[in-house]
Length: 518
Image (cartoon, rainbow, N blue to C red; front, side, top):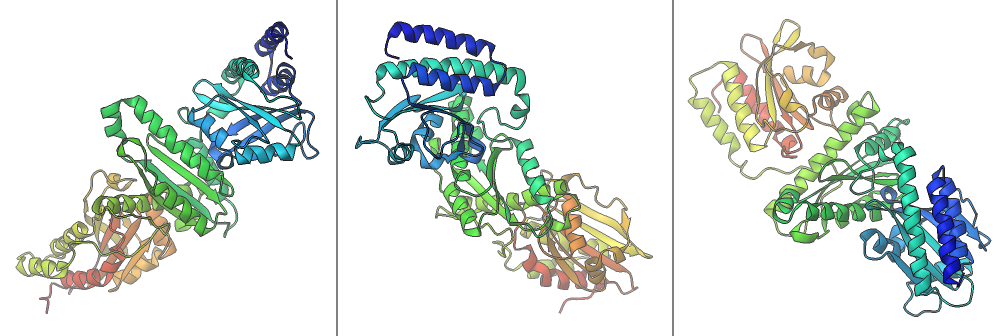
């Protein structure tokens, strides 16, 4: 349509359609018809952005279509990372563009798409609803002249009207989608992430590898304080765009913002190498104002810790990723070298400053005039808790056939999860026979458990309490009474806690027996 008056009249008619459309589907169909007419195009396609999955989905194709195109495609999608023009649209750099297949400056991906469609020229227009990119209107011509400045002006007017119609319809009838989307970034929210994970962790075991890559933005509060919340919001959007692009390159992946500066990338069926590559890319991301991304990942093919429900399994897997992320933060803090955090949830690292720990504890035991098991076990617990950054510890003794909590300490009041709320030394009692590893420790042994290793019942206990790891040892005093010392770790506890098992076993023996160490 070349006549300016005809274009204005057609735009007026389209505005009436926008004001009266009853559904998004109807509005999309009528918009494709209007794009063909107003822009003199041979074909028109309208696509919806799915940022959580790193892709755009074609909703409607109209006009002279290629043999493989469908007017209402069931599953025609394009990965964002393959099309720089769409990424520029999301980033806010452009609102429209034109391409020609024989233009040397054409983007290779867009030129190849034109060849597949059997067309020579194309134009694209971003559709925005409020502050978010909703999708794209894409038109082509098989021959004739490229789309010009008048076409761009008309196309921008058309998508402006389309945007207002979509905003009206979404406000009235699309609230369920908003419940699963993050308002600031457009990717998934915490509810979407939890539902995604619960669905996959509820299938029969073993299932395809399910991975969580947990991220947060370093120094966001300081950036908000120094540059204002507008700068902080822009930073959050950049991280969301990066996660969205990576999600589009992985099988069955989704990106979500689960808190203020916290994000997750979820994958189902990705190979270990793919997850490692995603972790490395995120860890190496350099953001404005000197910021970056702290990353931790965890992968499982079974419900962690013998979790009895998918919801419990989600929390357990999140805690594993949280622990890996905290280790990444510690490594970044102590070293300026490049760090690629491991996707393995457990590693063996002996904490700095733990050398000479045994001599220190032995000196305290020798110097103590209190020979009671409680007092001597407290000396052992406090020293190892400090060296390994343990969150809480607990001393229990057998009373008949029951194990009773008698002494405990929350070392870190701001402990993540449920540890800070534990009622230590409350007199709670349970049967050791119900926990085989505990019963073995009481008889003069020890055990280590994490959310992914150790006795199944002990792992289930960790999942319920919110702990990430536990190290315990026990022994009998000279009167035959049995004692147990348990150290509980959270994500900030040294992951080398397991390496202290022989030391703890020996020190608990000395503390309970009251013998002079040799």
